[in-house]
Image 1 (cartoon, one colour):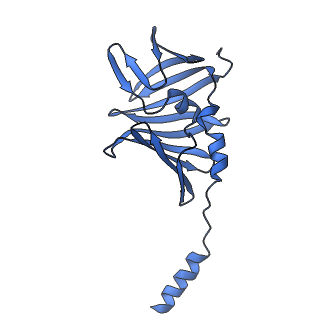
Image 2: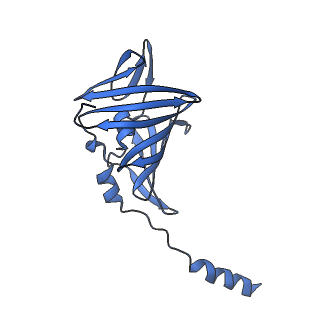
Image 3: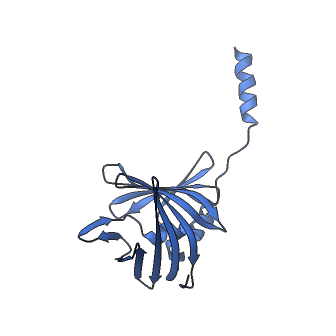
Length: 185
């Protein structure tokens, strides 16, 4: 029995060492200050078999969402349709550009993943990096329940290409089909 234990110990001690990325490089690369002040984006919102094309334009602090012939003005922390508004624990800009860190988060390393934890208003924010890119963003309410979850599904030319959003009991995929930081797509 002792021989088996020593053999297993020797086998696992020679396994690959899982290292986390440098937290300062991640903070610099994915800081919210890196979000462009003006841009336009062509998006596709997919929920089940439905797919809705969206166009998002930002100029300074004004955000305009156009879908199915309607236009909705957004602010950075809420999304309103008519009289119904949803509090967004993070900005739509932060989601699209994956700029999700503000520099105040605590950092830990677990199984080769760099994990940032911090407060975002009334929410607890958890950002999990796999390698040099964010993989999952979780926003927990004051009860510790998941309010918003973003899974970055793929990356195109160094930016997010698609993300799965779980929010308010809904599950949708946003595909970023085009992005122009000069503002004219």
